[in-house]
Image 1 (cartoon, rainbow, N blue to C red):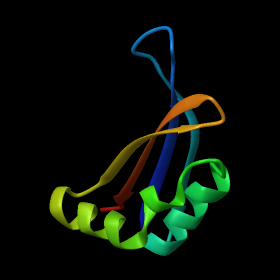
Image 2: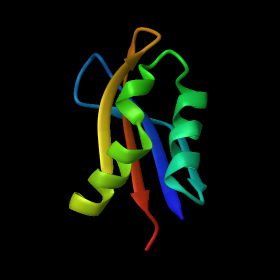
Image 3: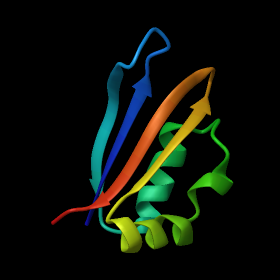
Image 4: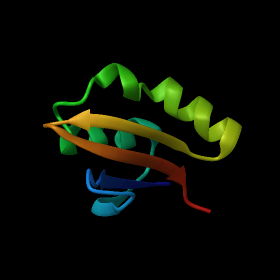
Length: 80
């Protein structure tokens, strides 16, 4: 199982505003969930292989993206 956290990065300072949290069973489901929540983001940034490689290397996947004129931080991590 994996947990997903999507947060909006505030333009007026170092604030992070939670937007979505969820759990899924696989990396592919996590990628689909992120792309469903942020349809304007470039899907090439969230390939299942890139997410799995990052999880294997550093125990999570973190990526800052821009969608709909806002900056977001996406984190996908395995549930322990």
